[in-house]
Length: 428
Image (cartoon, rainbow, N blue to C red; front, side):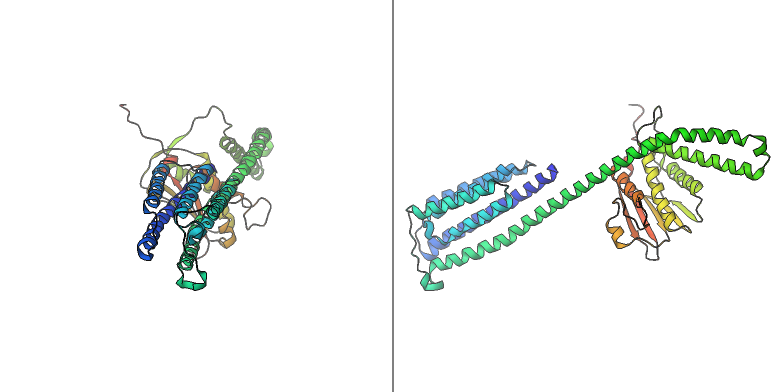
C-alpha cells in the first residue's frame, strides 16, 4: 500500500510542477502585455526577480523529484506555500487587492484541498487568507484604477474575465488529472486489500486441509492394511467378483493416501524428501497420463507443442492447479475435454478446453474469487480460486473465455523461469 501511495504522491507532485511552469509562462505574458501593451508601468526588475526565483525553485523541484520515489505530505505543502508566497509578492508589486488576478488564491486553496491531508490543507487556506488580507490593508507601489461600471472597456473587468477563464480551465484540466490519479490509487489499494483477503482465506483453507490430512493419515493406513489382509484370505480370493471389489477398494484407499500426501507436500510438512528433477515434456506427459488414469474421462485429447524441453523442478502446486482446472472442465463437460500445452516467448501456456455450457458473464468478471461458481452448492468455485492464486504465486496468470462453438477455455500462463533449473557451467 505504501508503494501505491508514494507513486500517487509523485504523480501529483509532477502535476504541480507542470502547473507551476504554466504559471511562469502566464506571468511573463501578462507582465509584458500590461507593461508594454496597456501602458501600465510595472516594477519589471522586482517582478522578474520573483519570476527567476520561481523558475529556479521549479527546476530544482523537477531535478530533485526525478531521483526520488516518495513524496510526503510536508513536501507537497512546502511546494504550495512557495506558490502562494510568489503569487502574493507579484500581486503586491502589481496593484495588490486591485489586481484582478488576486482570485488565483482560490486555485491554490482548491489544489491544497485536493492534494493535502489535514491539517496541511487548512494551512494553505489560512496562508492564502492571510496574504489576501495583507494585500487589502497594505499600501502597494502601484494602484490600478478600477471602474467596473465601464464593463469590458475597463481593464480591471478584462483582467477579471481572463482570471476567471484561466482558473476555470486549470481547475477542469488538473483536477480531472489529479482525480484520475487518486481513483487509480484507490483501485490499486482495493485490489491489494482483496488479494490480502484472498491470501488469508487460502491460509485458513491450508490449515484446515493440513489438519484433515493429518487426521486422515492413520485411518487410511489402517484401512489399507485390513484390505491387504482381506485380499489374501482364501474365502475372498476364491470369489472373483469379491476379490475384484476388494482390489478396487484398496486402489481407492491408495489414491486417498496419495491425495493426503500431496496436501502435506503442498503445505510444506513432508520431511526427508528432495525436490524431483524432471523435464518439461516429462512433467506435462505425466500430468496428462496421471489425470487420465485417475478420472477415466470418456474423451480426453492431450497435445504438447513445446519444442524446448528444459530441465525443471516438478512443482506439486502446478500439478494440483492443472488437476483442479481439468476436474472443473470434466464436471462441466463429461463427454469431451482437451489439454493443450505450448511454449511461447519463455512462457508455458496450458489450455484446458471443454464442450460444456461455458461461463456466464458474471463468473468471468469475478474469476478467481472464492465461491464464484455456477454449481449451486456450498464450497463451489474453490478450484479456480486456488488455481488463480497458485498461478499468481508462480508469477503467472489464469484467464478464461468462452469458445465460439460452445464450451469454455481456461488458459494458464507461467514463466518457464519459475520452474526451470538454472544451467551452470560444470567447469566453473
